[in-house]
Length: 463
Image (cartoon, rainbow, N blue to C red; front, side, top):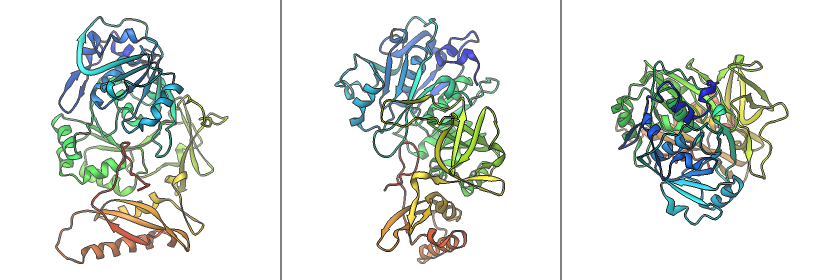
C-alpha cells in the first residue's frame, strides 16, 4: 500500500518533498508535472471544482491526463469516459453516477447533455493561479469495464485501491511508455506509477502508428514499457521494435503465451520481461518475472503481498485491498462474494505446479458438446516461428453446431516459393493435431494481413 500521505495525487504533488519530478510526454508536448502546482490546465481553478462529480471525456489523452491529476483530491468523484464509449450510454452513465460536471477538450460533443450543471474545458496550457493548499478530499474513481456488448459496468475505486501494487520509491525514476489509454484501468495504473514514483510517462496518441510510437519512445529514452499481448505482437511486427532499449517490459490484459514471452526476451535480453494479472474489478493480483507463461501454484491458498488467490469452479478468484469497492448504478450483480473475493471469469488449469489461463468463461466455443477456449488454440498456432499473431473463432456447422476456424497473420516470407502459404498452413495444422484434442483443431486456416484490435488493446473476437 502507498504511504498515507499519497492517498491522493494532488496531496502527493503538494507534499513537502518538492512535489513531482517527472513529466508528461505527448506526441508534440512536454509538461513538467511540478508546473501544475502553480496553475491549472482546466477552464477554472481546480479548487473551485471541489466536491463535484466530474465526468472526464474527450480526444486528447495528454490534456485529459493532466485534468485527472488536478481533479483528484478536489472532486468528490471522477468518472473516466473511455474513447470508444457509445454516445447512447452517456445519459445513463451521467444519471447513475450523479455527474454534475463534465470536463472535456471537446465540449461541443457533450454540450447538450441534460442534468449537467457545469461544463469545464481542459487543455495542455497552464494558466497561472493560486496553488491549492486545501485538505484533499478522498476522491472516488469510476472506471468502465471493457465489455464488448451493452452498456459497460461502472466500477468504483479509490487512489488507495488503484495504487496498492505500486512501489512509490523515487530513488530511480522511470520513463514509462504505455500502449494503454489512461482512461482505462491499465493506462491509469501506469499514470499513477509514473507520478507516484517520481517518473515520467509517454502517452500514446491515436494519430500515431505503432511504428511512430515506438520511434518516439526510443527518442525520449523510455525505459519501462507496458501493453497487452496484442499490443506487443503488433509491436514485434514493426521494424521500430529495435529502436527501443527497455529495462522493463510488462504484459497484461489477455492470456500471455510462451512464444510471445520468448520473442520479447530474445529481442530485449537486458530487460525484465514480466506479465501480470489485473482487471478493472479485481485490481492488480500478481506479477511474475520468471519468463514462463501462467503463474506458480504457490500463489494460491495463501496471502502473498496482501493478495489472496484461489481457483473455484475453474475460475480465478481474487481478494485484496486492491479490489474495487463495488459497482455504481443498478442492474448489476454484487462485485464481491460473501468472503470478499472477486470472480474474475478467467478459467485456470493447473498443470505441473503451474496455473495456466485457458481463456474467458464467456468465450468458450461449443463444438459438438465439447468446450474449446480460443486462446488455447491460438497459443499453439503462435508457437510457429512464421506466425505473428492469430485469432480463433467459431463458424456455424449443421453437424456439430460450431467448428473452429483460425485467422493467421504470417511473418514475411524469406523465399519466393509460391507454395509457401500452403506449406505453412500444413505445418500449423500438424502442430495443432499434435498439441490439441481433435475437436480443437481448426477446420480451416485463413491468412490475413491484420486483425482488428479494440481501443482497449485486445483482439476483437466477434468479427
